[in-house]
Each structure stands twice: as structure tokens, then as C-alpha cells.
Length: 389
Image 1 (spheres, rainbow, N blue to C red):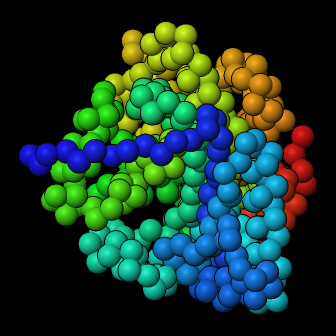
Image 2: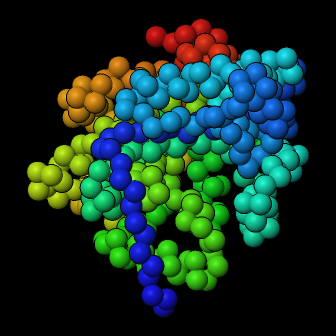
Image 3: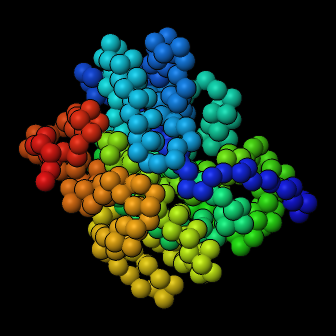
């Protein structure tokens, strides 16, 4: 075993946050994914003398909106809205629409073009068939950790809620045009990569450093950010990053999930300060919860305690909202956190997509139109195209 190399943690202000939203570029006429990210990014650059906050991703059908370091979820929302508006203005003349989902309802992975960049070429070269299938899209939320010694305990505690976050965001019920009967096919596909999926639960920072050193020594990774866990520490930013969520079609859903993550991390930090032992599930319980959330979404029955106590995810999330209400008020994200209740009431994206598909004569193109309409209006729509109640 190699001698562990120290991994310093950058200073970060507590509960600051950053949000990354991967968006799909679709042809306005056919609904297929369009391989035009380079052209969109160039148009944004020309119009705005740069495109800070709007970047390319693995595939040429994707752009990613990345906020700066924000104090509140509302600030992150304003940042994302500005970037979204810029992308839509750039893409519109190309007859390209923008939306969010964990996976495209019917475009085929073998038709998608990989972005020409060394990091992506290395990924595809190593992972081959599985890597080429990564036509998937997510939302990532960073939350600042002021005290590095609390990073791993908070991360382990956040794993107890990973399935709730996945259920709320689940938006990939289709794969290559086939109804998978999974709420989030994306999450199970992504974990096929060798350093993706659920993280190990380390007890000490030295254990984490030892793991990273071994991965680097064996050539499993060349740099730290190639560890693509569902929840991971990001020492360079001094943050915990939540990556388990599917991409979502509306900004309000993205902000609702971001608010829930921010509140959970702040709550865990506060409880640690008070000397409390944070909740923790065994690895098998965390894995089982993830599978249940991916399969059943908002109908998942989750393991909520080490004693194997179980609770319907919707009941569990409502309990979380009650408990976190004072935290949300203190952080100034109570309005965005209320968006979680909207998801509970109107259904997660996978449910709304399935409702559209259930209409007589509906096609995959209708599902794409539905997703685009939700993104444009920032509203959760029913199968008839009207806002739900």
C-alpha cells in the first residue's frame, strides 16, 4: 500500500453553495438530441464576450450551467436563470430547444457525439461500451463546509437522504425509446463506471487520503475529480457535492432540491456542533434505498433507520420539510424549499412524462415537447399541458 499523500481542504464559508445543471439540446422539429453544443457555446461567447457559467460536457448534445459561489439558493437561481436565458437565445436561431431530464426519451446513445477533450477521450478509452452509453444528465449541488473535520461525518449522514433526493428528481423513465419501469434509469446506468455510484463511508480523513493515493498509484484515476461518486467531498472547493439527482426540466425543481441539500448539510453541521451523533445507515441499506428510489421513485419505501424501520418516501420527505423549516428560514431558502411540496403534490418528472405517454396516440416527441414547455415556463405541467394544482 502506498504512503497516503495529504489532501488539503480549501477554506469555505459554511453553507455557501454552487449548483450545476446539465441541460439537453433538442431539435425543435424532430425532438431528437442535437449535436450542437460547440455552436451554441460559440454563439453565447460571441454575444456576451465570454460564457462564464456555461460550459460543455461529455456529449455534444449537452451544455452545463454552473453558478458561482452563492450565499443563498435564490442567488443561485438568478445565476442559473441568466445562463439559461443566454443559452436559449443562442440556440433559438438554430431551431434548438433546451430542457432537462435524466435521459432523452428516445434518442439512441450510439448516435451521440463525444466532445473533443482529453478528459473525455480518456474516459471513453477506458470504459468503452459503458462509457459510450453515458447519454445521461444530472444536477450537482455543492455546499460549503467550514470545518474540514466535519466533512466526512456530514457526508455519511447525507447518504441517509440520497434516496429521497433521487426520488424527488427522478426523470429518466425511458431509455432508447423503451419504458424501463424505472423512475431513474440514469442513476443505475451511471454507477456502471468504475469510480461512480455510492461512495465508501470513511471514518477518518486519513482513510480517505489512503484510498485516493491507492487509486492514483494503480492508475484507476489520474486526478481527484475522476472519482464521480453520488456524494463526494471536493477538497479543492471545501465542499460536499451532491450528484445523485437526475437533471430536471424546471429551474424551480432544481432550486427545490438545492434548498433541501443546503438545509440538510446545515442541519447536520449544527447537530455536530451540539455534540450529537449524526444518523448513519449501513452500506447495504444505502444501496438498497438507492435501488428502491431508482425503481419506484415517489412510491419507494425507504429504510430510515439502522433498525431497518421503513417509511414511504413521500411521508419521509414531508417529515423532513417540517423538521428543516427553521433551518430554511435561517438560510433564507424557505421559498425554494417549498418547491419540494410542489413535487410531492404534482409528481416528479418521471411521473409527468409517463402521464403524457399514457395519452392516446402520444409519442416520444410529445414527451420532449412537454419537457421543453416545462423548461420554458418554469412550471410543472399535467399531461394536458396545463399547470397542475
